Amino acid sequence: MKLYAQILYNRAHWIFESEERPEYDDSIVLVDITGRGDVKEGWDYDSKTGVFTEPVYEPVEPIEPQPTQEEIQTQTLLNTEYLVIMSELTNL
Image 1: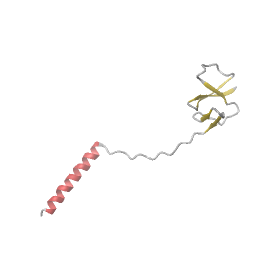
Image 2: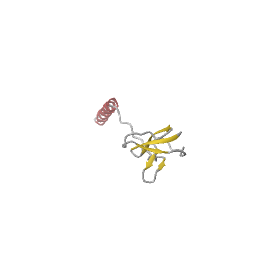
Image 3: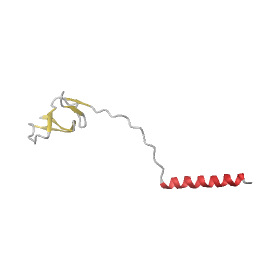
Image 4: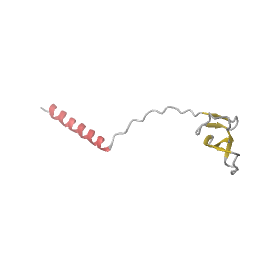
């Protein structure tokens, strides 16, 4: 059995075994990876060098959760009450 990788957008999209190379349309790129068992689906493929590399992802900064409509309304109400109380205290 031979091991093949279907290449899609310069990545190993699908890895499968077959007795012989399947005949598909020319737009489907298949690479024989027999003996290269370290290649995994999702790995980057350089068509010029024929080398597969594990993808490197940049760390993503966590996104602060946005307040809900209810939280915004509650904060607005609290701020308004605070200002009213402060105004009443200064008028004493």
